[in-house]
Amino acid sequence: MNDSSTTAPPWWQRPLTELLTAYPLLKMQLADFGIEPPPDGSVTLAAYMAQLPSDHFEHVGIGPEQLLHHIDRLLHPPVRHSPLKVECLTVIGGRNKTGEPENCELTLHPGSITSIVGPTGSGKSRLLADIEWMAQGDTPTGRRILINGAAPDPELRFALEHKLVAQLSQNMNFVMDLAAGDFIRMHAESRQIDSETIVDDIILQANRLAGESFSATTPVTALSGGQSRALMIADTAFLSASPVVLIDEVENAGIDRKKALQLLVRQEKIVLMATHDPILALMAEQRLIIRNGGIASILATSQEERDHLAELEAIDARVQQLRNQLRRGERVIPVQ
Amino acid sequence: MKLITVSGPPSSGKTSVLANVIRVLHGEGRQVGVVKFDCLATDDDERYAALDVPVRVGLSGNLCPDHYFVSNIDDCVRWGVGEGFDLLISESAGLCNRCSPHIRGVLAICVIDNLMGINTPKKVGPMLKMADIVVITKGDIVSQAEREVFAFKVRQANSKARILHVNGITGQGAYELTTLLNDAADVPTLEGGALRFTLPAALCSYCLGETRIGDDFQEGNIRKIKV
Image (cartoon, rainbow over all chains, first blue to last red; front, top):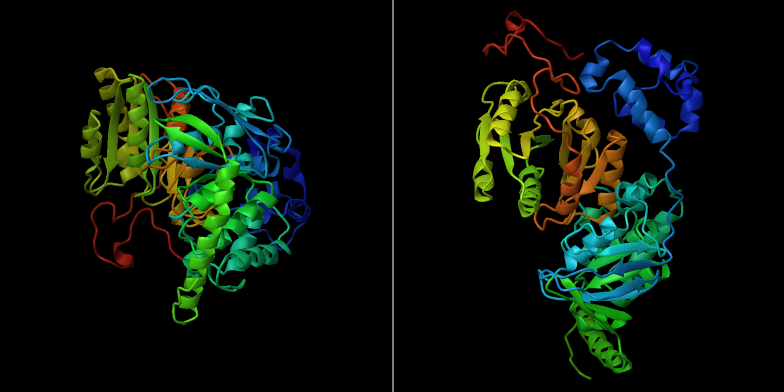
């Protein structure tokens, strides 16, 4: 303990009351190591830790000096870079599984939708992994990822607050047993975002996507499949730090898919969507054809395809209407 | 020979993550050996053997698994050096959460999964808090929000480690994890080495086979709840 004072950062000698006000997370961080602040807040953290039972640190499994440095790193994260604002993301092609060059350069902008098509095992996950890892020719595909036209700082790979890709898929579930409002609040707190209006905003948006509405007091584990997906999408749109959102097969989710995509686009996400649903695929401006581990081609959605979209949407609306008849307990009447 | 220690709560996905890592290492032509520490039984040696990885199994039985680990790891290093491996991986389950399997100067990985609940990271001791790399698994089955909150909680428990998401089933992230293993130090021997933190203490009458309950039978390192 004593020799640690030589290497201790200055805040250690400030009164606890002052520290707890300056660093709102400190109370939780100390509690995680079994340290409850004393009633007398004028004592310094150093003095307080010095009078804890000598075996306290053995029990919690960390030395006092290690704890001090841990908390110091949390309170003063190294400032490596300013917040990453992604204006554009570029994928410079590498090679496919058999070593043939991809010969492509793909630039994605916030608010755009790109669909990804290709059979299972064709390399969709690898493409996403390359983006997430900000590959610099150092992955099996040899692809390079540029952020705002330049190779990003390699340390960004490990900065949790700068994770590039958020994912949404059919297999995902809520595993926490919390009410929807508390769940959103907890996510907001972990991102250190003021949570007063965000809870209402997200629930409102999620209800616009889901067929049946839920409230802030509904436990997330009690949500239907469609409501869960709607909450996940709204939460990701507003609270996820990641500028890229990958959506994996949302077709049977029972939500308004068009509104869901519009919500993500409005929040300036770069949307990538692995899907073989024609309506979703045609909502995208372009689609990547993945084959044999590589981007085989990039197809811009043509005017002719867009003309089909209206027809497909009419069919989809009709099916949705039948679904609603069922939900309301009515007879299913398949008239035109 | 490089050495890495991999630990994590039971069923967190250690073997699945390592299987994916080993496939990448084999692809690069590297010789890998594994020592699997477990308590009563394990089938993981068969999973490693199926990957053509030489494997040794240590079952701690009625001994504290951590104490068993530390009294055997040096012998395992000797085995690995003798076999001419490029890399030896020690895999051990952390059972009481106060375990402390990481060694100074040896790359330490902790594997923990998203399903354990957000309060788990703070409940896990030196195994997580003193790891160099924390691998989070099972991210494909929980929501994005929970992944972000869980990673935040891991950061609150270990402010220094590199935190990676690896999918043990598809292998997504395993390649990236493998690149970090190049940082592992060469360890010719562990003779004279030291653990990063003390192991859970022991040595009471129950360590020595006592089964009877009551004050008369409690001797040695005993601590009482304030009830």
